[in-house]
Length: 223
Image 1 (cartoon, rainbow, N blue to C red):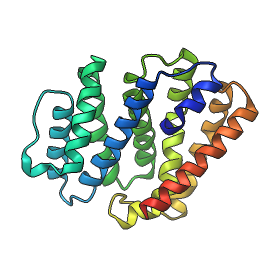
Image 2 (cartoon, one colour):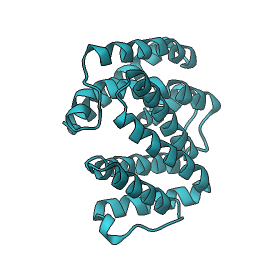
Image 3 (tube, rainbow, N blue to C red):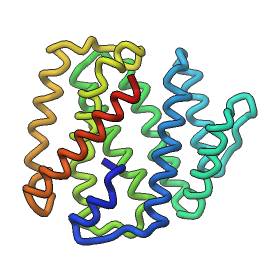
Image 4 (cartoon, rainbow, N blue to C red):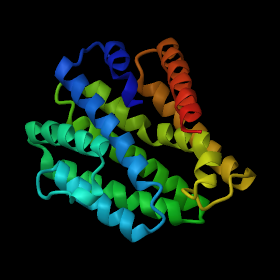
């Protein structure tokens, strides 16, 4: 969702500054890199410890050891630290990031579909709050839309990635009908809210189609 911010902003009659778009791009690139570093670690304690160290480094309240850094991770952490520091929202960024780390670990471990759905929606909302910290020029209606659809957009991501996540040990629930049916039901119940928040039905359909293409390509690249 965050990758199509220019198009979303136009639909809501506003524009985002080049700096805001650059900051979001840096954030998303850093997030993908951090995921690639943390997800393969088999031990929860190691993932949590390194994840918290990365957050502290990004927010200027700690440093990463040389052993934890790869050239790619170092580059992304340095760029994101500059973005977060300049935003003057480091404390809020740290709070939401740590909440997201804790939520992600519990989501990986749970065998309850109901809890997984709740935590998936929470993950989406936390991600949007992090994005909004870096978007001071977002129009109120755009902010309301992003917050309103954050949960169901993340549910769709999880539906798309379930098979791959399970094979990698990032999902403890076998992705069968017991998993997909309630996930899709909650996703479908959230669609009317998206319609109410978007300026036009045709625009929502167009945006949704583009979003589906982006998510499909992302899944192919991950596999």
